[in-house]
Length: 146
View 1 (tube, rainbow, N blue to C red):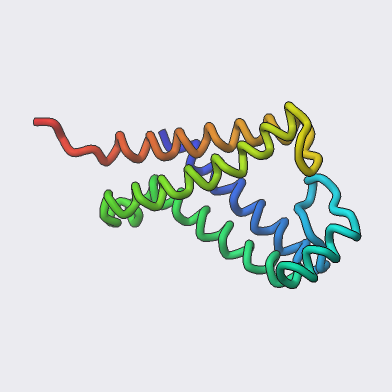
View 2: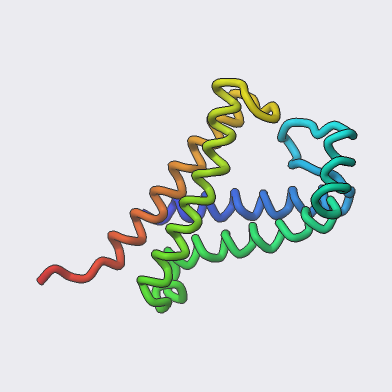
Protein backbone atom coordinates (compact mmCIF):
# COMPACT_ATOMS: atom_id res chain seq x y z
CA UNK A 1 0.00 0.00 0.00
CA UNK A 2 1.78 3.12 -1.23
CA UNK A 3 -0.75 5.91 -0.87
CA UNK A 4 -0.31 6.49 2.90
CA UNK A 5 3.38 7.29 2.34
CA UNK A 6 2.58 9.73 -0.46
CA UNK A 7 -0.12 11.45 1.62
CA UNK A 8 2.21 11.64 4.60
CA UNK A 9 5.01 13.06 2.45
CA UNK A 10 2.64 15.80 1.28
CA UNK A 11 1.74 16.55 4.91
CA UNK A 12 5.41 16.75 5.92
CA UNK A 13 6.17 19.08 3.00
CA UNK A 14 3.20 21.27 3.99
CA UNK A 15 4.60 21.31 7.54
CA UNK A 16 8.01 22.41 6.20
CA UNK A 17 6.43 25.11 4.03
CA UNK A 18 4.34 26.43 6.93
CA UNK A 19 7.37 26.56 9.19
CA UNK A 20 9.30 28.39 6.46
CA UNK A 21 6.55 30.99 6.12
CA UNK A 22 6.48 31.55 9.88
CA UNK A 23 10.28 31.67 10.04
CA UNK A 24 10.36 34.38 7.38
CA UNK A 25 7.79 36.33 9.38
CA UNK A 26 9.55 35.70 12.71
CA UNK A 27 6.37 34.13 14.12
CA UNK A 28 5.99 31.26 16.56
CA UNK A 29 3.46 28.51 15.89
CA UNK A 30 2.09 27.08 12.67
CA UNK A 31 -0.36 28.34 10.02
CA UNK A 32 -3.80 27.05 10.95
CA UNK A 33 -2.69 26.22 14.49
CA UNK A 34 -3.66 27.94 17.71
CA UNK A 35 -2.58 31.58 17.98
CA UNK A 36 0.53 32.35 20.00
CA UNK A 37 0.24 35.43 22.21
CA UNK A 38 2.86 38.16 22.15
CA UNK A 39 3.76 37.30 25.76
CA UNK A 40 4.34 33.63 24.85
CA UNK A 41 6.38 34.68 21.83
CA UNK A 42 8.60 36.97 23.87
CA UNK A 43 9.01 34.44 26.69
CA UNK A 44 10.02 31.75 24.19
CA UNK A 45 12.54 34.05 22.51
CA UNK A 46 13.97 35.12 25.86
CA UNK A 47 14.09 31.74 27.61
CA UNK A 48 14.62 29.26 24.77
CA UNK A 49 15.89 30.32 21.36
CA UNK A 50 15.39 32.89 18.64
CA UNK A 51 11.96 32.20 17.15
CA UNK A 52 13.00 32.56 13.50
CA UNK A 53 15.95 30.21 14.04
CA UNK A 54 13.83 27.49 15.61
CA UNK A 55 11.25 27.79 12.85
CA UNK A 56 13.96 27.58 10.15
CA UNK A 57 15.35 24.46 11.85
CA UNK A 58 11.94 22.81 11.50
CA UNK A 59 11.97 23.23 7.69
CA UNK A 60 14.64 20.59 6.94
CA UNK A 61 13.03 18.32 9.53
CA UNK A 62 9.83 18.27 7.49
CA UNK A 63 11.71 17.76 4.22
CA UNK A 64 13.78 14.89 5.66
CA UNK A 65 10.65 13.28 7.08
CA UNK A 66 9.01 13.46 3.64
CA UNK A 67 12.07 11.90 2.03
CA UNK A 68 12.15 9.08 4.58
CA UNK A 69 8.51 8.11 4.09
CA UNK A 70 8.93 8.31 0.31
CA UNK A 71 11.92 5.99 0.63
CA UNK A 72 9.52 3.31 1.87
CA UNK A 73 7.79 3.17 -1.52
CA UNK A 74 10.62 3.85 -3.98
CA UNK A 75 13.34 1.68 -5.46
CA UNK A 76 16.04 3.93 -4.01
CA UNK A 77 14.62 3.51 -0.52
CA UNK A 78 14.42 -0.24 -0.90
CA UNK A 79 18.22 -0.32 -1.20
CA UNK A 80 18.57 1.07 2.33
CA UNK A 81 19.10 -1.73 4.88
CA UNK A 82 15.75 -2.82 6.32
CA UNK A 83 16.90 -2.55 9.94
CA UNK A 84 18.06 1.04 9.40
CA UNK A 85 14.78 2.01 7.71
CA UNK A 86 12.71 0.37 10.43
CA UNK A 87 14.72 2.16 13.12
CA UNK A 88 14.15 5.52 11.41
CA UNK A 89 10.47 4.79 10.84
CA UNK A 90 10.00 3.69 14.44
CA UNK A 91 11.55 6.96 15.62
CA UNK A 92 9.23 8.86 13.31
CA UNK A 93 6.22 6.88 14.52
CA UNK A 94 7.05 7.82 18.11
CA UNK A 95 7.61 11.47 17.19
CA UNK A 96 4.49 11.77 15.05
CA UNK A 97 2.58 9.89 17.75
CA UNK A 98 3.72 12.37 20.38
CA UNK A 99 2.73 15.40 18.31
CA UNK A 100 -0.52 13.81 17.19
CA UNK A 101 -1.27 12.79 20.77
CA UNK A 102 -1.00 16.40 21.89
CA UNK A 103 -3.27 17.56 19.07
CA UNK A 104 -5.78 14.78 19.82
CA UNK A 105 -5.84 15.33 23.58
CA UNK A 106 -6.07 19.10 23.36
CA UNK A 107 -8.46 19.05 20.41
CA UNK A 108 -10.95 16.65 22.00
CA UNK A 109 -10.43 17.18 25.74
CA UNK A 110 -9.42 20.82 25.77
CA UNK A 111 -6.25 21.07 27.80
CA UNK A 112 -3.15 22.59 26.24
CA UNK A 113 -2.40 25.46 23.92
CA UNK A 114 -5.72 25.62 22.11
CA UNK A 115 -5.83 22.94 19.42
CA UNK A 116 -9.44 22.54 18.22
CA UNK A 117 -11.46 19.38 17.46
CA UNK A 118 -10.46 19.47 13.78
CA UNK A 119 -6.80 19.50 14.82
CA UNK A 120 -7.58 16.37 16.85
CA UNK A 121 -9.04 14.74 13.75
CA UNK A 122 -5.93 15.74 11.79
CA UNK A 123 -3.77 14.21 14.52
CA UNK A 124 -5.70 10.93 14.22
CA UNK A 125 -5.30 10.95 10.44
CA UNK A 126 -1.56 11.67 10.59
CA UNK A 127 -1.01 8.98 13.21
CA UNK A 128 -2.97 6.49 11.10
CA UNK A 129 -1.00 7.39 7.97
CA UNK A 130 2.30 7.00 9.81
CA UNK A 131 1.31 3.64 11.26
CA UNK A 132 0.10 2.43 7.85
CA UNK A 133 3.36 3.54 6.22
CA UNK A 134 5.49 1.68 8.77
CA UNK A 135 3.34 -1.45 8.59
CA UNK A 136 3.27 -1.41 4.79
CA UNK A 137 7.05 -1.09 4.60
CA UNK A 138 7.59 -3.83 7.18
CA UNK A 139 5.30 -6.22 5.29
CA UNK A 140 6.72 -5.38 1.85
CA UNK A 141 10.31 -5.93 2.95
CA UNK A 142 9.77 -8.93 5.22
CA UNK A 143 12.02 -11.90 4.46
CA UNK A 144 10.39 -14.67 2.47
CA UNK A 145 9.31 -17.36 4.99
CA UNK A 146 10.30 -20.23 2.68
